[in-house]
Length: 439
Image 1 (cartoon, rainbow, N blue to C red):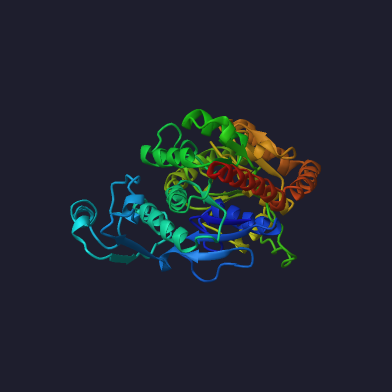
Image 2: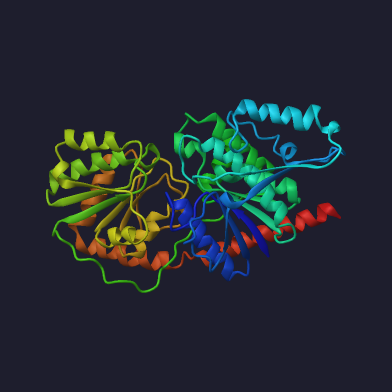
């Protein structure tokens, strides 16, 4: 089985859990005899390619061909993309409209020979102001990649909304079945105040897909109810965690205080404000506790101001965004890990904490709650319950040891090999159905 996979990030260059999940998945797929070609907007050359061949979209020249016979070209194949931005590298929207009018509509019959127009775009691979523009351009590159790799893949797999148009483009060019992976919906990120443009892309991607993989039953229900995707088209495959080889000894702690950690994007979705309010309640009962907020995001300044107003700034530490071994070290320094997410499709970080023998507290509004028995679960909005859970784990050593021990045993069984085996089954189903349709 061979898969052409589109993602937005790949370790070691990641901004969150999506890249971590993609890496674990590719390793698991390799062990299930699935060959992966993984396309990212921008590759840096230091990616681990033992389990997947990484293709740098920034190195791909998109090729536009116009012939007198009026054959379909890339521009026509991309006509389903409706984004208010420049869709072709290095030219303005006005210039793009002029080129399209000249080459596609009015000028095509005037050409007596084949005309070729090549463009290359260097993607930032970031989540910046021109994100929508890069999403559209990435789709155009995806079509070219699918054309160049004709015969080298059996199925297409696109991760999250950023790559859905790329997946659709590759499907239209190659005729191969498409699987889209929903790691987080716009409802998770924005509540009911959804970005209609992102919602439309998510919906289009799932409607065009042959199968949709959701990372939890929580996410699956949102996909069915909020996007109107048929239930028999959506399958749940829970994420997993990778256990690294033997590493360095745990870092030495410079303080005797208990350490309670929040690690994730400091955004509405992750519930950082509830963590702060619970911390203030705990410190009224147990002064000798330190709280760490590791991450970055648009709520950072708000959280810092709230910590100052509550008078707990001397017990709070902001590390900024952590990655790689720094994440593992942070877990090893922690006595409790807290994930108070308002809406979490899955949540890999609690598994990483449990892997480090750290007891965890998670919100009931998280997909990972579906697979964990030995995690304390509270409603994200119940600050008193969250404070009580933290207090219990830092005050009663036997309770903390029990959750740490049982949690580590539990998470050991959540392997990417098993998740990848389920994903391979999805591939086999859509490939077989596609072959039947072509008969």
